[in-house]
Length: 288
Image (tube, rainbow, N blue to C red; front, side, top):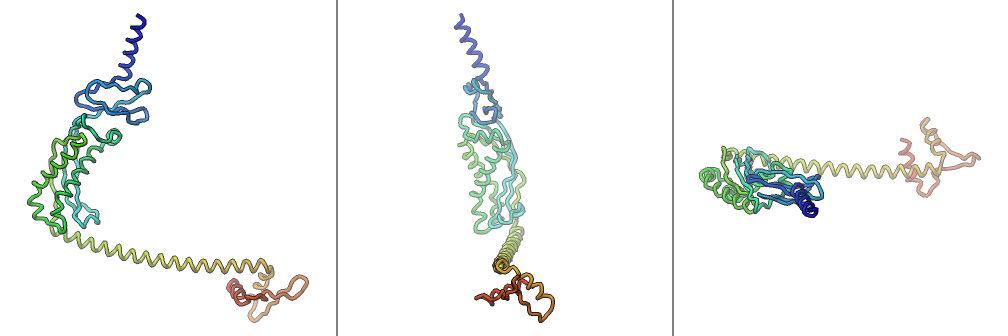
């Protein structure tokens, strides 16, 4: 009886702590208390062994969802302008379903990012539109042919996206298209003129920056030379303490010749050096 009671108690404990039931219309993501992903739970009864030893959290995500997005595809080479005015814009409404048995999405992103699924489908749509519409955009923009064939081309885009997403366990059930914006030839021409102006401005800015950098380098060289002169003068003053007195008296009046002597009145010529000319010039500059 004791053994039976123990087994029953253990079974109840495991059931309460480690068994999670998942309904028909949801999938569940299990995390620890620090929101680290443990795993994905599917329809029916699931056992989570980690729950026997540590607390876990269960987040339920509906199998069915919907989202809206704007598919924006710049017309080459106007992507450099970064404006929707020079881009094809296709508003879409999307309905999707998770295939829990084939789900290969990033569980951490599904758990933490509410727009994750929307981003996955949007990226797939943009890639498919770029591929399918390329013949209308390169080497030149063909507005009228694209306008005439848009609906048929976008059906191909949707089928491509469905195939790509299905491989990751994301079933795209339906894609509805809103009011499509296709820049006409006049806007395309305007964008090309604007792009030329931007490129010219970038070129001018680059030249100005190069000139400024050159001037800074030249100023830096001049400052380095000035510093070397000051260091030389400092060294001279250290060797000849009376030089400051000489400079002071020399500034009192014009045509005054100054002779600096030591304390014992021995005559002392501070410029009696081998590099007299260089040092004299440095001192004269220092006086100014």
